[in-house]
Length: 210
Image 1 (cartoon, rainbow, N blue to C red):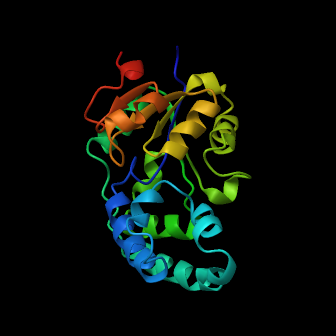
Image 2: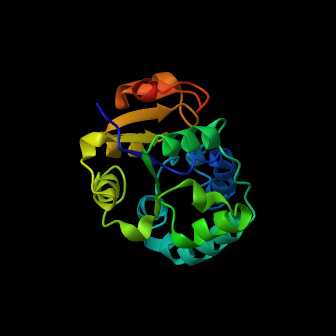
């Protein structure tokens, strides 16, 4: 199998942000869903639209705008530290002629916050696809199929790096080789949703070892 493109989710894969989101959503969930302790853990890996549809509909739909504003402010001050080993890993891929892309459910305003904190970030990738580029959210394969189309390669020539259940399912549904990062969920929890599991990018990825 010759890999031509490596496609990375952002949160929990490129940058170590999931624990920060747990703090944010913990505050929101305790405020609006005190009857459901631990909801901030349950919604990990869900898009904002999915969270709103399930947990902030009906009478709570009126608070969505306020939550979005709070989230935008929170993301503007977040720390966007890369997962251990990521930067040398992606640099090595590009030196080998493998195209790289971020494929994230995050929106453009969120990514603008990333660029403000990490001006060099965009130089690590050949493309960055955000939620505005997709018709359907993960676990639908649309986002990864569009990334393959962007590069003009077959899905079977792509490797996906994901940490969430929805993201892993998306990569699998796209017909791509899927590497699960045990950064958000345990290795045992995600093992059945991917082709191999790694703790971080200091660990060799089997399909890219040679």
